[in-house]
View 1 (tube, rainbow, N blue to C red):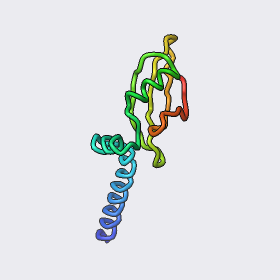
View 2 (view 1 turned 90 degrees about the horizontal axis):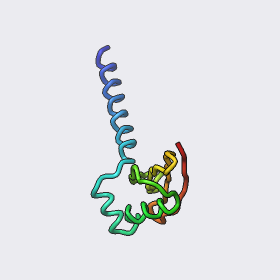
View 3 (view 1 turned 135 degrees about the vertical axis):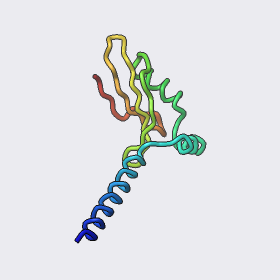
Length: 103
């Protein structure tokens, strides 16, 4: 009786580790980012940050590269002079603003 239960637990742990890997797969490591830049699949972050500050003037708070549904996006947070935090999502290949939010 214990053997089937142990097998079920082992399978559940295996499934969790695979799912966790898929979720963690959205995080990009340094080597992957470097390869994307070298192959021209994404723009340099500096170029995208300049573009974002043209769209929304203010102080850069945070910037990161993300992968969502197979597409690469830069998420840029900018603190405006009035204290509002603006979150911009830019297409990493073109620099185009795809979405923006305010807090």
